[in-house]
Amino acid sequence: MKPEAYILIIIFFFFLFSCHMEKAVVKQDRTTDVEIVEETNEPSERENLREGDSIPLKDERVPEPFSEPIDEVRETESIIDVIQSLEESYEKRDFEMWKNFLTDSYKKRYNDPKFLNEEGWDAKDLGSFFALLIETRKSANISALSISRVEFISSNKALVYVMFGDEEFPEPQHTFIKINDKWYKGLLEEGE
Image 1 (spheres, rainbow, N blue to C red):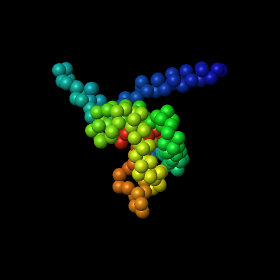
Image 2 (cartoon, rainbow, N blue to C red):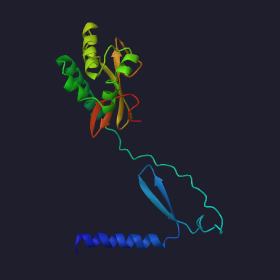
Image 3 (cartoon, rainbow, N blue to C red):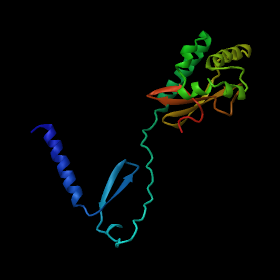
Image 4 (cartoon, rainbow, N blue to C red):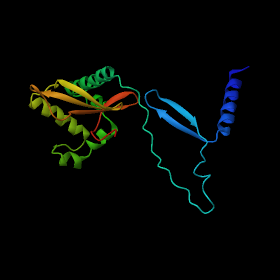
Protein backbone atom coordinates (compact mmCIF):
# COMPACT_ATOMS: atom_id res chain seq x y z
CA MET A 1 0.00 0.00 0.00
CA LYS A 2 1.28 3.49 -0.82
CA PRO A 3 2.23 5.90 2.03
CA GLU A 4 -0.50 8.30 0.88
CA ALA A 5 -3.10 5.59 1.47
CA TYR A 6 -1.90 5.09 5.06
CA ILE A 7 -2.18 8.82 5.69
CA LEU A 8 -5.73 8.91 4.29
CA ILE A 9 -6.75 5.93 6.44
CA ILE A 10 -5.31 7.59 9.56
CA ILE A 11 -7.12 10.83 8.78
CA PHE A 12 -10.38 8.92 8.18
CA PHE A 13 -10.14 7.07 11.53
CA PHE A 14 -9.21 10.30 13.33
CA PHE A 15 -12.24 12.04 11.83
CA LEU A 16 -14.48 9.08 12.64
CA PHE A 17 -13.21 8.94 16.22
CA SER A 18 -13.63 12.68 16.77
CA CYS A 19 -17.23 12.62 15.49
CA HIS A 20 -18.25 9.96 18.05
CA MET A 21 -16.95 11.76 21.11
CA GLU A 22 -19.72 13.50 23.06
CA LYS A 23 -17.42 16.21 24.40
CA ALA A 24 -13.69 16.41 24.80
CA VAL A 25 -11.77 18.62 27.16
CA VAL A 26 -8.28 19.43 25.97
CA LYS A 27 -5.65 20.41 28.49
CA GLN A 28 -2.12 21.46 27.71
CA ASP A 29 0.54 19.98 29.97
CA ARG A 30 3.22 22.70 29.71
CA THR A 31 5.93 20.54 31.25
CA THR A 32 5.75 17.98 28.45
CA ASP A 33 4.03 19.97 25.68
CA VAL A 34 1.52 17.11 25.28
CA GLU A 35 -2.19 17.62 24.88
CA ILE A 36 -4.33 15.46 27.17
CA VAL A 37 -7.81 14.64 25.92
CA GLU A 38 -10.45 13.63 28.48
CA GLU A 39 -13.93 12.49 27.52
CA THR A 40 -16.86 13.78 29.54
CA ASN A 41 -20.54 12.94 29.41
CA GLU A 42 -21.69 16.37 30.58
CA PRO A 43 -24.11 18.13 28.25
CA SER A 44 -22.60 21.09 26.50
CA GLU A 45 -23.71 24.65 27.22
CA ARG A 46 -25.45 24.70 23.84
CA GLU A 47 -27.48 21.57 24.70
CA ASN A 48 -28.82 23.25 27.89
CA LEU A 49 -30.11 26.27 25.97
CA ARG A 50 -33.80 26.69 25.31
CA GLU A 51 -35.31 28.49 22.40
CA GLY A 52 -34.73 32.24 22.74
CA ASP A 53 -31.77 31.88 25.11
CA SER A 54 -28.60 33.68 24.14
CA ILE A 55 -25.35 31.79 23.78
CA PRO A 56 -22.90 32.78 26.54
CA LEU A 57 -19.55 34.06 25.37
CA LYS A 58 -16.57 32.07 26.53
CA ASP A 59 -13.45 33.63 27.92
CA GLU A 60 -11.25 33.02 24.91
CA ARG A 61 -7.66 33.45 25.92
CA VAL A 62 -4.98 33.70 23.31
CA PRO A 63 -2.40 30.98 23.91
CA GLU A 64 1.18 32.07 24.33
CA PRO A 65 3.26 31.36 21.25
CA PHE A 66 5.44 28.30 21.61
CA SER A 67 9.05 29.29 21.95
CA GLU A 68 12.01 27.00 22.05
CA PRO A 69 14.65 27.47 24.73
CA ILE A 70 17.27 30.03 23.80
CA ASP A 71 20.84 28.85 23.33
CA GLU A 72 22.13 31.94 25.14
CA VAL A 73 25.80 31.17 24.55
CA ARG A 74 25.37 30.80 20.80
CA GLU A 75 23.02 33.77 20.50
CA THR A 76 25.31 35.97 22.61
CA GLU A 77 28.22 35.09 20.31
CA SER A 78 26.07 36.03 17.29
CA ILE A 79 25.20 39.39 18.85
CA ILE A 80 28.85 40.07 19.74
CA ASP A 81 29.79 39.31 16.12
CA VAL A 82 27.28 41.95 14.97
CA ILE A 83 28.66 44.47 17.47
CA GLN A 84 32.18 43.82 16.18
CA SER A 85 30.95 44.35 12.62
CA LEU A 86 29.33 47.63 13.68
CA GLU A 87 32.64 48.70 15.25
CA GLU A 88 34.44 47.75 12.04
CA SER A 89 32.02 49.89 10.04
CA TYR A 90 32.87 52.88 12.28
CA GLU A 91 36.60 52.31 11.83
CA LYS A 92 36.25 52.00 8.05
CA ARG A 93 33.66 54.80 7.92
CA ASP A 94 31.56 52.39 5.87
CA PHE A 95 27.99 53.67 5.95
CA GLU A 96 26.60 50.89 3.71
CA MET A 97 28.14 48.19 5.90
CA TRP A 98 26.71 49.85 9.03
CA LYS A 99 23.21 50.11 7.50
CA ASN A 100 23.16 46.35 6.83
CA PHE A 101 23.18 45.69 10.59
CA LEU A 102 20.18 47.92 11.44
CA THR A 103 16.48 47.08 11.58
CA ASP A 104 14.18 48.94 9.21
CA SER A 105 12.57 50.70 12.19
CA TYR A 106 15.96 51.90 13.42
CA LYS A 107 16.87 53.22 9.96
CA LYS A 108 13.51 54.97 9.64
CA ARG A 109 13.73 56.58 13.09
CA TYR A 110 17.28 57.88 12.64
CA ASN A 111 16.55 59.09 9.12
CA ASP A 112 13.86 61.44 10.48
CA PRO A 113 15.30 64.99 10.84
CA LYS A 114 12.59 65.97 13.33
CA PHE A 115 13.42 63.05 15.63
CA LEU A 116 17.17 63.70 15.34
CA ASN A 117 16.65 67.36 16.23
CA GLU A 118 14.40 66.51 19.19
CA GLU A 119 17.05 64.12 20.49
CA GLY A 120 19.76 66.77 20.22
CA TRP A 121 21.61 65.31 17.25
CA ASP A 122 22.93 67.84 14.74
CA ALA A 123 22.06 65.57 11.82
CA LYS A 124 19.52 65.70 9.02
CA ASP A 125 19.30 62.03 8.00
CA LEU A 126 20.72 58.56 8.63
CA GLY A 127 23.92 59.28 6.70
CA SER A 128 24.73 62.45 8.62
CA PHE A 129 23.80 60.66 11.87
CA PHE A 130 26.35 57.94 11.06
CA ALA A 131 29.01 60.59 10.30
CA LEU A 132 28.19 62.35 13.58
CA LEU A 133 28.53 59.07 15.49
CA ILE A 134 32.00 58.58 14.04
CA GLU A 135 33.06 62.16 14.81
CA THR A 136 31.67 62.00 18.35
CA ARG A 137 33.49 58.73 19.01
CA LYS A 138 36.71 60.14 17.55
CA SER A 139 36.59 63.46 19.42
CA ALA A 140 35.75 61.76 22.72
CA ASN A 141 38.38 59.08 22.08
CA ILE A 142 35.72 56.39 22.48
CA SER A 143 36.42 52.92 21.23
CA ALA A 144 34.34 49.80 21.70
CA LEU A 145 33.05 49.49 25.26
CA SER A 146 33.39 46.15 27.00
CA ILE A 147 30.20 44.12 27.03
CA SER A 148 29.18 43.19 30.56
CA ARG A 149 26.16 41.06 29.72
CA VAL A 150 23.44 40.24 27.23
CA GLU A 151 19.90 39.97 28.60
CA PHE A 152 17.41 38.04 26.48
CA ILE A 153 13.94 39.54 26.70
CA SER A 154 12.61 36.87 24.32
CA SER A 155 14.00 34.54 21.71
CA ASN A 156 13.94 37.48 19.27
CA LYS A 157 15.02 40.40 21.44
CA ALA A 158 18.09 41.07 23.55
CA LEU A 159 19.52 44.00 25.48
CA VAL A 160 23.28 44.54 25.69
CA TYR A 161 24.85 46.18 28.73
CA VAL A 162 28.38 47.61 28.70
CA MET A 163 31.04 48.50 31.21
CA PHE A 164 31.71 52.19 31.79
CA GLY A 165 34.89 52.45 33.78
CA ASP A 166 34.75 49.85 36.53
CA GLU A 167 30.96 49.59 36.63
CA GLU A 168 28.19 48.43 34.41
CA PHE A 169 26.32 51.30 32.78
CA PRO A 170 22.79 51.13 34.27
CA GLU A 171 20.92 51.36 30.95
CA PRO A 172 21.32 48.94 28.05
CA GLN A 173 23.43 50.43 25.26
CA HIS A 174 22.17 48.22 22.47
CA THR A 175 18.91 46.55 21.59
CA PHE A 176 19.09 43.65 19.19
CA ILE A 177 16.19 42.16 17.28
CA LYS A 178 16.36 38.76 15.59
CA ILE A 179 14.82 38.71 12.13
CA ASN A 180 15.00 35.63 9.90
CA ASP A 181 17.63 34.05 12.16
CA LYS A 182 19.93 37.11 12.09
CA TRP A 183 20.47 39.77 14.78
CA TYR A 184 20.11 43.47 13.95
CA LYS A 185 20.61 46.63 15.99
CA GLY A 186 17.13 47.90 16.69
CA LEU A 187 15.01 50.14 18.86
CA LEU A 188 14.14 49.43 22.48
CA GLU A 189 10.40 49.34 21.70
CA GLU A 190 10.79 46.90 18.81
CA GLY A 191 9.95 43.24 19.11
CA GLU A 192 7.32 43.60 21.84
